[in-house]
Image 1 (cartoon, rainbow, N blue to C red):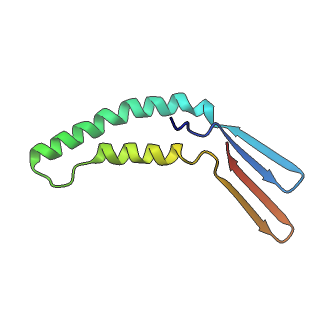
Image 2: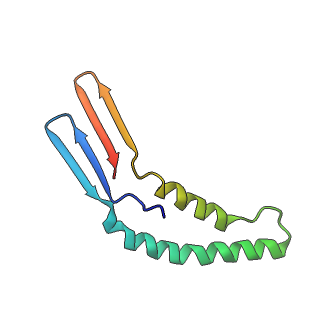
Length: 90
């Protein structure tokens, strides 16, 4: 099972570090998922019954969730002259 990122760790040089707890947003994300998934299923069914060729909004939404969950472990480091910025999803 792929778990979404829990923290964003940001470092600005050697002097300042910041961490943002993403796990506090998980309940809000769960509410959004519970609302959006039935709506996408309804849209897919209506478009299928209307005879539209492409009707996979549910698959698109689930794919986007998979991409967001796969960002855990992402690290970006930016060096520009005397400025260093570190960005990690843990």
